[in-house]
Length: 410
Image (cartoon, rainbow, N blue to C red; front, side):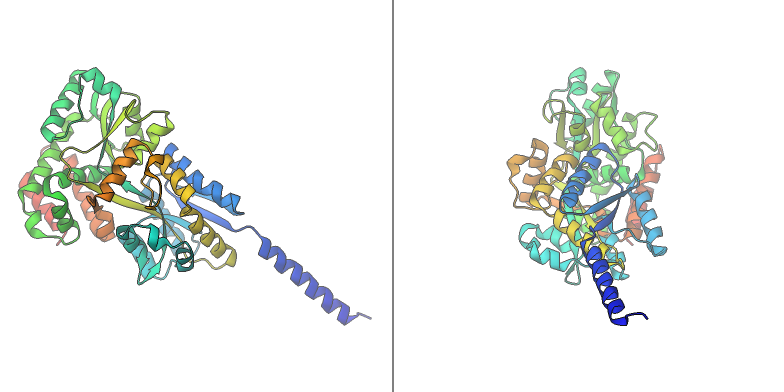
């Protein structure tokens, strides 16, 4: 005869053992990102290492190219199979996911970490939605940089960083005469849009840039500054090589690292490629702000947390949010990725001359958010298409181009 009391006790003990085993299971996170280059990989490793030190299990899911990774992520969401963590760009893009109820807030982690006290308001405002914190910022990128090869400049007899567009094009002529590629061009529309914005900021100023991208101000859109932007941007076509169409940004960076090209206009994540290659700023390469700029365009990287159904995944999300904002992780991440730390309470002397320039620009308030922060994803797509088509046309009509740019904001 079966002893039901003993069987019940055994069942309870087994259930307790199973529950304890589940409770002790390491938080497991599938981290979905587009960070695949050398510098990006080293930066991601800084987060991964600390996450694993704290008991987490990390599963890496990386797809090269932000647009490709974003499309794959959306497919995962639609299929009901979201990753635990998604690398996102701060701005309107994650706001759509949040509005649809697809993301999990991390208020408890942000409150415990006193994030409001250590993040700049300009960033804090964009990681909170309806009073709740949804994103853990990994760093801030400056997008107004002109990286250049010291060896290439020396070979062309260029002794100073160009600070005006006239001086810049004169230097590009010198690089071409020396048999070098003047501009290492990443021939993808998103990259071209970033260069377009650098020129635009130099021609309409900080206030004009905000009036265009935050307000769609038709007065600024019809100004000579926009026309000048298109003319300067279009003039750059004469200084890129035939292999530029479709080129990835890090491949363009490699052209500068090896001295085959003179300059590259790119966000400061490109600096991570120079660092990975063992190059030293001020000795092997230079980091200058783009000519005639009155300030710096910035964008923020962050981790977002899709809604998951299991407690283990939720625990992993909270742990990663804590790790991302750890001061030592913020330092190591920024050193490898070339970004500016999201935290404002870190010692600037820990960073190289390039990052210090960016930190100083931010401290002076001479910064404006990149278009992807202020525009809807639809408007971002329209802008990207416009810039890509303008660049691909060897002889565009400037009047038509001004009207097409203005139409993005109607």
